[in-house]
Image (tube, rainbow over all chains, first blue to last red):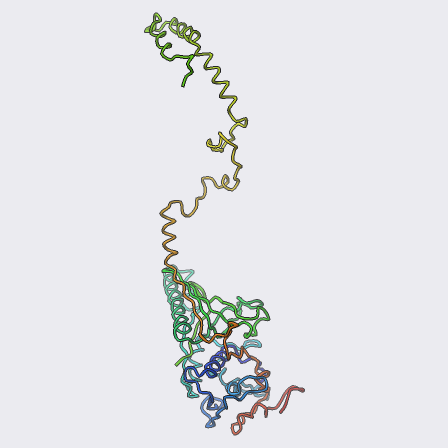
Length: 249
Length: 168
């Protein structure tokens, strides 16, 4: 808000998943969500609001999600207040151009803080690949650390496989995936995208593995085409910059 | 093999009967030539050379053409094969190597699934989409007011900063 125009696909992905749960009564999400409105430092303001479950704003979106974007004042510049959305600030979202970016390392802790502050019974767990960590930076140049990076990426891929199989296949819940948006038309590898995924596919060899997920590109707003569901590639060995999260009890 | 007009045994008999066959005099070679003329061996040899030349393919074998193709049409020259001859080889050259690859491929475990409430259009019901814009469709204004006492109405009480934006 203020100069900020976007609230970020990461916080929105949390709201999208919660709305799917709320409409179906999954994972203990109540029909009428009570939000504990924050002060500017994200602490409890003392005011709570219970949003009727059927309440929708003129654009058709649920009103509880609108209040999850409660304005939090960050600072004042040139006599103008600079705000961020409540849940975006909880996820430590940073303004990047006209978009807002949430780092993978902040996704689960930030969302869990916001969920706990509002007494919602679900939590976020997941896995993401830590790009540009020490093993990644040293891998191509020092042969000794090569196996370290190989093990790191290998374990990440298999963790992602397990998360997808358990979340979508076993618990019958959608997952949040972070993927390289260059896979869709007019996308770019310069930004990643958080989106709910409801289909998965994994290929597991004894020494190699890869995983894919289906997202509804018609709802992502990243690209005009192709509309509708597309299968996007998440990871295999040595791939970078993605993650999978589960929002469940 | 030989035709009936030529008897190998007759040559041997002639050589054995000729004088000086055990010595190194040229008389024995003359005797052998006479024997060949008499029993028709040289005529038979000439006939067989003619027959071989007549039945041979007219195109002489170029270098690199396999001798198996001499009997029929010469194979067209595979330029790629000839170019990489003796330089590269396929990855799997033995049956055992193909088998090991096949066994490796057999270890693939493919697993897929989806949530049970996926819509018939392969979409997620209730997903309102990636609505990232804070002004539309969420209706927060550029300079919002934090009205804690009436939060449900707070966004619409915000002050618009751009002329033409809906409602204060």
